[in-house]
Amino acid sequence: MDFTIDGRSFDPDRTDQQVRLDTVEEWTIGNVGPLDHPFHLHVWPMQVMDVDGRRPEEPLWLDVVNVPAGGTVTVRIRFADFGGRTVYHCHILDHEDLGMMGTIVAG
View 1 (spheres, one colour):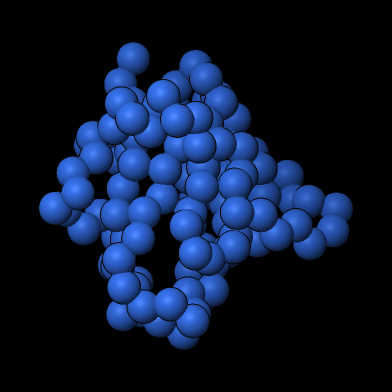
View 2 (cartoon, helix red, strand yellow; view 1 turned 120 degrees about the vertical axis):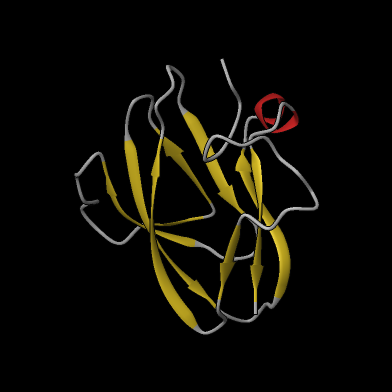
């Protein structure tokens, strides 16, 4: 089993995502593997828009969202108040250590 994001293992010298401050983006996070992966984005909370196409009954804001095995989660993120470089990763630390992490730069 590969522990990657977008097919790539973590490289601290690579920028995986670049966003502009004071913008809002929706990300769809897919999981093709056989295990759930809790996705954590440092600095910015995520509003869960749907899990496998189902919307939450009421607004749901999280900093870790579970991405079910074989499923997808769509989140809305407001990139504000922090410019610079940080990371997102699987919150299972063994998975993160095996490469399931990426870098994001906001500016």
